[in-house]
Image (cartoon, one colour):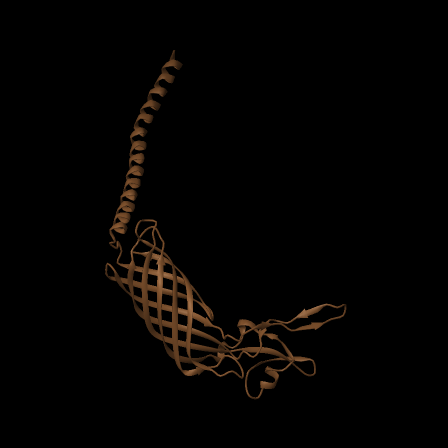
Length: 276
């Protein structure tokens, strides 16, 4: 009999504890439902602004990967809305520019057994790597808004500013008798060896940084940006445009080829980021 009383008491206590836990579970479910409803409301508000053509943001920050017909680069942009259809832009870029006559090649030497050892690839006649650090101020103007949440917004962009050209001498390894190798860059004294038949290969990214020279200049750009992102709080876009750069100092990139002051190129960029 006592065992029955003890078991009945334990069941009563457990049922009370279970009953106390039910309200907590109900509250957690309500919290999850409230959060889902708030998220739905935010999305509905964003879609409403998008359909009405009203921006639901004040600033944006985006990164971009650029492919020029004469090089490649990275970009970063900060924008601030001035009106529903216009924003001011602050842009920064890091690019490497190639010369149209650049062509990679390799040298090889034969060993016993018919094997060939290839040297490091190099660009024959290249004298300098040409990098660009750019800063620009510009405007973004909305040309066409998204017709619906699956549409594409079109923006016109123009900007201009300073371009800091960085020239890094191009080094190669050449054979130096008797059976030795030395590393040289292009110079009047070494021009015969630099352009001669005894090139072993290139030296890669390790050399030339201590010999950087600077060439300040100006640049301008014009572009169209196509944003296909569904929501206004994010940006995913393709950008097509043209760059124009001018340097008072001639930029020398290839031996026995005249340097240039003016550069013009087209580019394609993939742009992505966030709006707030």
